[in-house]
Image 1 (cartoon, one colour):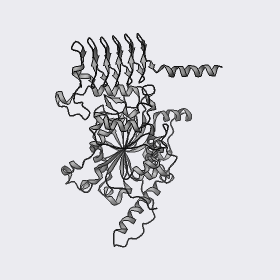
Image 2 (cartoon, rainbow, N blue to C red):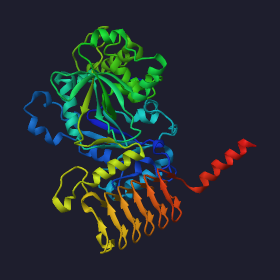
Image 3 (cartoon, one colour):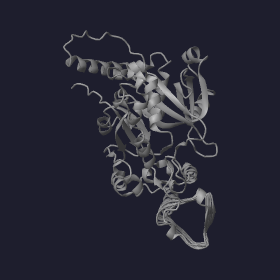
Image 4 (cartoon, one colour):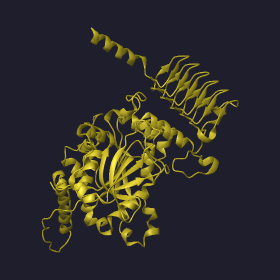
Length: 506
């Protein structure tokens, strides 16, 4: 069977993982991670919105005079978007795409749920699944469902295209295209954020793009340093890159990649690749300076076969006699890194409760399009969707709050710097500060909540005082509960844990 040639255009694959990092916040049997609310919108809304505005074909007329872009219109269209999700989440995701008002406003993506996709499956393993392999038909975006990115995809696509050069962007040279990945500065104030150690060679032509030489998770770095009693570098790196390389900490991999088509074949062939971030990206970066690594990874085979397939295809369409391609080892296509510095525009992965809280509260401060005509990509139409449901004698700091549809706020309540999800009820006398309340929640009378995240369909009993707490969806917190830094889970789970302890003791 001959190799399948890539199609023109650019596609997007969004990985909708199980969200185990959200721990006690989500009941994963009821709510997939990608449907958790960030600033009252389903999480998957943000990468879908990113993909929707990543078509720059409409802007090409302004840059048509630049020859590097003249023949690349079809290459810059995101032709289709596919969500990769576990089978258990398929029904919930399809229902949300058809019913949620925010998701209905976006183009409908395809949803693929591979039968063998396991909750613990690593990202590179996922790329090897037959259903995912069949989805990839062109160069592609790969991004997670938990990415909130205010940088337009058009901007990244332009930089990627320009970095490749006119010759490489030509259709017959697809096999020579490199990749692009994004890193951003982590937040010091947020706990449990996974950062990276990266090494780059700054590009002469761009202040933003650099050649990536190394990318290692800081957790891995710490483990290796404990094992080796220090941080070890290969001699080949120090000899070739010591005068040019910069080692950086404090950055995080956004897991947003622009991959050429041949990466599909590399992931399929290399079964030892598990993580895309550390294994595929990390080893690709090292192959630029570690002798023989590209051969061990099979990069030369992937590149040569794709080139041969394309040459055979063009040969069949032409009457010109072509000589067989000469045997040579292709140069490793470059892997470039886009380093996003500063706090604006917002680029953030929301993969734990602390980041869900901080990101939601930041987005809540955006002005509405109704009040001031704000054009920020994630600005809401209205800060308070159902003002008729809000009692007259209560206080809501509108500048830093979001209230979803059908949110009932009773008299004498105070809400500051918070997001209140749709169909929730804030009973009389409640005080809520710096909290994220998800959908369908009831906050009892005279409750005081500060810095809390309350999961969907939960109930906080009257006169409760909670600070920096997490409440799992569907849980009931008894009346007059006072707690700080606690995680509230359903009672039956606690009983199961107690039973297990008792059984072990017998």
